[in-house]
Image 1: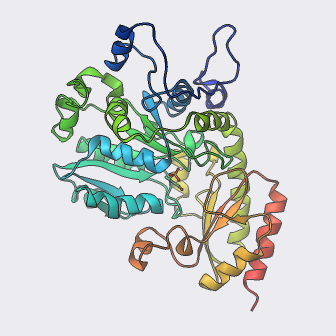
Image 2 (image 1 turned 135 degrees about the vertical axis):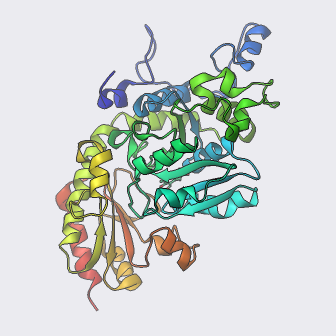
Image 3 (image 1 turned 120 degrees about the vertical axis):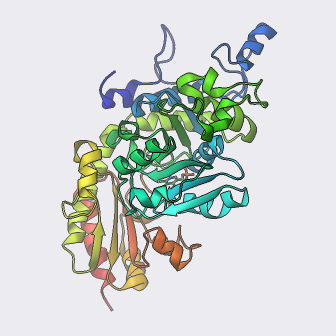
Length: 427
Ligand code: PLP
């Protein structure tokens, strides 16, 4: 399978003669075997197979194979949510005494995890702004630094990752580059092609695409050499929690995802439910069609906003006037820039409130990236716990409104947004 469109529809599940054409939901916690030896071999990872859904399940296995094919990786693991995926990805390499480096313009939940919760567990996070130089990042790297984290494009600040700069620094210091590819999806961008080593997703967003199932995915790029790399002792020493396995020696291109699964998923248990795996797999079957439409609708709305007197600024990398346009054209396929647009409304928080109340088709929801268009004012919702300084670091101002454009008819969306803009400026 070469085409990304075909992979969306068909990768991951290939029924044998007489088996169901549609991926079945294996709603079973456990799997039965004829002999204890077979069960033992599964535990020892001598044979591939399923024995307990916390460690793997055939429905989830098909989804994992699909995302692996789409991203161009070596293996994947389904998790209960995007937050679980990011947390387990960090735990796979970092422990108390270690540190990670992250772009500051990331999703608010991830920012809180890195800024507040991980430090409580002894993992320090060092933030850099998106306009940082290679030297800025390098000044933060020491012997205990375990990864650099970035979103392909930031939610909601909309900065596009400068993969060339980040991967150059990561390679020079033999450090993992971990990319949250939630908002671009592999239909628009495949970070492994640009130097990333690990990709994480909140599949809750475009992959599911219908706002009906929480989920997360970790994808291993299989392109990082942990062997004898002093930073990654956990990959080179026997794992006492898993029969003395040495991941760098025993697991080849799937060292990261095997460690994530048998060490952290096994012990922390944040597995995706099989039903959610089924829904996510079905969502991805139309991902290529939806991303085209999301991008088309978002570009039309971004142009309307750019021309409106009620708007101070617009951020959408698809606009040729946008500061991130060149990076988007370098890394994104077909000129698609996804369905997220942010803008600053004239009149601050009060106008933001009027604008949201006046919308009819776009609804106020704490969600993005599904088939239905929606709106949110991050400073008073998802990011309301953050201080003014933190808001600034995340690239959020108090007049920033985030739109997630769905796949409805363009003319209806434009009419709704234009009407609400007019309403927002009435006294
Ligand atoms: N990453 C990004 C870019 C997100 O936008 C979100 C949620 O909005 C997450 C991760 C967290 O995902 P989840 O809500 O599935 O835990």
